[in-house]
Length: 415
Image 1: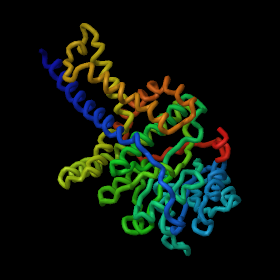
Image 2: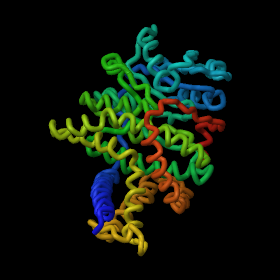
Image 3: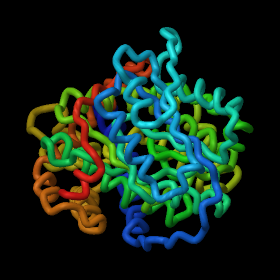
Image 4: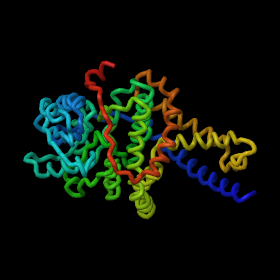
C-alpha cells in the first residue's frame, strides 16, 4: 500500500469512528425525547418581567409581536415591554410606541449587533425605576403564545434561573426552504431539547424565547456580544454550574427565510459564531466534564464539538455513500471500511426516522410530511456551510435578516 493510500485510510478511519460515535450518541439521546407530559400551572403570578426586544429596522413586524405580548394571560402591571431601536433608520420607534411599548433608541456604529444591544439594555435596566425579577428576550419578528409568561413565572418560582422556550415557526409552508427549516426545528425541539430536559442536561439557548433571572445577570453580566450571543451566554452558565432548562410548552413563533440564499446566509452566521465559541469553550468544558464527572458539562462540550446537530446527518449519509460506492481505478477505491456498510445504513435510517417521528409527536400539520421528501437536499447544504464557516470563523460582522411579512397570532390559530 502506498503512502498516499495509507494516509487516506487513516483519515477515513478517523472519520468513521468520529461520525459513528456521534451518530449513535444522537440516536441514544433522542430516545429520551419521545416522552413529554404537559405540566399544569402551579404558581400564581409572582415575578415581574422586563420583556426585551432587539430591533433593527423592524417597522413591519414589531407591531404584531408587541400585541401578542400585551395579550399575555399575565397581570399587565407585572411586565413591561422594552424595544431597543438599534441603529434604526425607519419607523420602528414610532410603531413601538403606538403599540404601547417603551422604545429605547440606540446609535452605535462600532458595537453593532444584537449581543451589544442586549448588553446595553440590561445595563439600562439595572438603573431603571421599576425593579424586575427576570428578563425575557424576543426577536422582532416573533409572535408569543398567550401563556408564555405564566410558564416562565412557574419555572422561576421552581428555582430555575435560565429557561429556554419552545421555538416554533410562523411561516412553515411558504416555500420548501421554510418547511425544511420548520421540520429541523420541530425535530430539535422534541428529539434534542426535550430529550436533554428529560435527561436533566443543559438546554441549548436559541436567542429568542429566553428568560434569565435578573439576579444572575447582575452577578455574571451578559458579556455575550458575538454572532451567536445565545450560545455564548449558555456556555458561560454551564461553566458556572447553572443549567439552562427547556420549557416545552412555552411557545414562540419565529419567521424563517424563504429562499435558499437567505437561509444559507443566516446559517453561515450561526456556524461562524458557533466555531468562535467552540474555540474558547469546547476543550475546557469537555475537560471539566471528565475531571468533575459532570455529564452536563461534557454534553455541552460535545455540542460545541459537533458544529450543528444536522451535520451528523450529513456526515453519516456521506460516509454511507463513500463506503457503498467506491469508484474503480481511483484513490477512493483503496479505502478500507472500519465499520461495516450495514452499520451506516442502520444509523442513517434511525436518524432520518426521527424526523417523521418528531412531526407525529408534535402533532404538526399534515402538510409538513410532504416536506420530508426534499429535506435530505436541505440537510446536505449544511456540509459546505460548516466548512466555509470554519475557515471564516474570525468574521465578527453582524448580518441583519430582513423581515417583510406581518403575521398576527390569530392568523396562526386559524391555520
